[in-house]
Image (tube, rainbow, N blue to C red; front, side):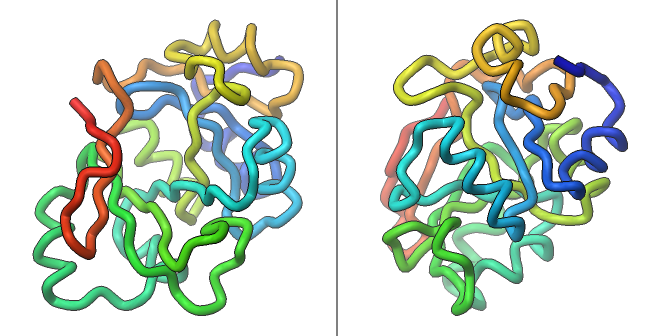
Length: 187
């Protein structure tokens, strides 16, 4: 399994349609280009994750999320933007035309602007938001190191970006932007 600490090499694999494991705030994530249907479907199969559940998109800047989310009202912006970049994932209304393979059965999509340096630089180098789902199959625990990723999924990935996670004990908090409800507690 190819491993690297080279962000540009990982970004190139993503642009080519590959699936890359990369560190996030608490665990390793699996990522690909969210506009590449074949890559997303391959990732869903690898994870054994039903399409209907939807996926999280991770970005370096809120502008990278613009193609996937409906325009944010002033109230939503006031709720969301003070938490970004940071370890809070928000469920927001999905933009018309966003592929179903990203938002599943929902009229919303989960998005985060990360403050994790490596993940942020990966999004910048790839030139897009990334699909971000924990590096594990089905109900297995998410990987927290490159070694754990390699043992669990290595043969099925195109690259592992070997760098430390952000050190959080639990995956990021998920909140519904419409009412602030916590859907998954974080730190």
